[in-house]
Length: 173
Image (cartoon, rainbow, N blue to C red):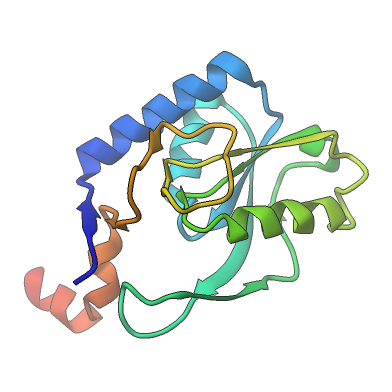
């Protein structure tokens, strides 16, 4: 059995707010870049708090049927999705939900630095996540929770992975 850390929505919001306070204190990014899907709710909240434009990088990194499957090869989408203009990418804050091994954040920094439309506009990239697992070799610039173990983090929306649309229809009759 995998060790699990179960996070409810109220806890999640408090952690995101702590992250916002850390960022606001020490960094003034010009754009928030989220690694999808994990960063989606974080990016939404932070962009509202910090009043910044957003961009999304879609990366597939986990494969298999169960929630505790291992990280696989990283596959990047061809393009960033954003309405931010190139000059907004001067000071990038790259956001993911967690630093598990550190591979996704490291590879995403490398990808951003080589992404043609914005690479010449980037002056600085800093990183943020909600959790850093003990075995992660990556040190995020901003991270409110540094764990002393490597649990599977069950986030508030993760239960939808195991639900079918039929089950949701039945619950909402």
